Length: 80
Image (cartoon, rainbow, N blue to C red):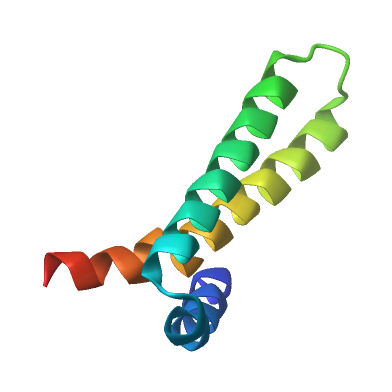
């Protein structure tokens, strides 16, 4: 929950400087990279259980951060 709140607050500060479109593109690219990394990690067989667990949590947290900093906050303006 704190990751989502902090990333949304950062996006509120950046949306006026950068604009919505670059923020949305940056967020989509970050989410794509984190999902790709997560899928490659899941496909890899050589990882141990502890490494897999730590990497899983870190990549999911990274995905939540990118979503909250871009699509979670900026897409709301397009729907209202």
